[in-house]
Length: 147
Image 1 (tube, one colour):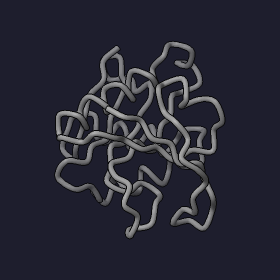
Image 2 (image 1 turned 60 degrees about the vertical axis):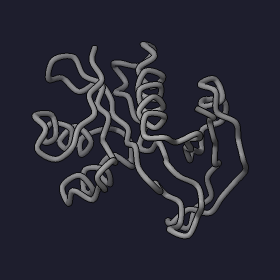
Image 3 (image 1 turned 120 degrees about the vertical axis):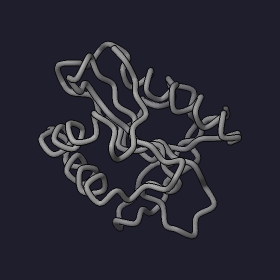
C-alpha cells in the first residue's frame, strides 16, 4: 500500500474523483465536486491510499475544511474515508500520520480535524476542543493534535 499526495493532473486524480463519487459515504460526492473544480490552494492536497491504481481511501489537507472562513484554526485534515473492504488495516492512521508530517514540514505546530465520530481520533493523538458550528449549519466536534 502506498500513500500519495495528489493535485489536479496527477495520474490518480480522475480515479480518485470516480472513487469518491461512488463511495458509500455521503461526503464523497462533495469531495468529487471540489476536485472537479480544483478548489485547492497551492499547499492543499488530496491524500490517497492505494495499491497500484486501486484506491483504498482518501482524505484532504486543507486550510479550513468545514469551518467558517473567519475561524482562526488551520490547517485541517478532512474527508477521511477508507473503503469498507480495506478497513482494519490502519489506513486512516497512516494517512493522518502522513498529513501530520506534511503539515510539520510546512511549519505548522498543530493540525485540526472536524468529526462527528466519538473515540476515533483520540487514539491518533487528537484532543477534543469542543463543538463548533460548520459552514453547513451543523455542529461537529473540533479536535486538535500537536505536531
